[in-house]
Length: 168
Ligand SMILES: C[S@@+](CC[C@H](N)C(=O)[O-])C[C@H]1O[C@@H](n2cnc3c(N)ncnc32)[C@H](O)[C@@H]1O
Image 1: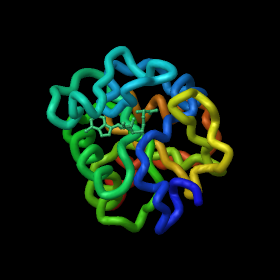
Image 2 (image 1 turned 90 degrees about the horizontal axis):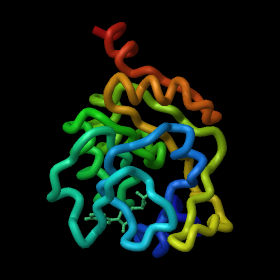
Image 3 (image 1 turned 90 degrees about the vertical axis):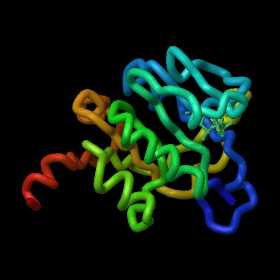
């Protein structure tokens, strides 16, 4: 079963890397706080790994965050929302508590990616199976909302700040 599937032991494995074309389309990042120890390519100018514990470190600048999966992910989304400058890549599980608390309530824009991503292994190879679930890019802060609007990644853009204004 793919990583997004339910009840999969593989879902506990964290080393599913972002396809590099997604990163290329979004521009450069200052920090990836959750990066593999041995990475096939940089995802930002600075990286933290599990050896540093990125949640315990200071965050700076524009942050890229494809977080560890499962219940852990909420802590990273919470931190990124507080930081207020960055983009996360997560599964589009729009009904979950994590999504309601850290995405719907706090993000600036979302890009729901068309189709399913094939993540990369730490050796750089493309996974044979797709991620098994839909993915969404979550922007916090104006410049990251603009990056989602201008990136050219095929999908559907939702500007959340505008939505919140019309709901008030
Ligand atoms: C889904 S992968 C994404 C990797 C990379 N950020 C990317 O976008 O390709 C999540 C990464 O978080 C790392 N990780 C897990 N726990 C961590 C921690 N406490 N601090 C820093 N990195 C951690 C894993 O080793 C894994 O490489």
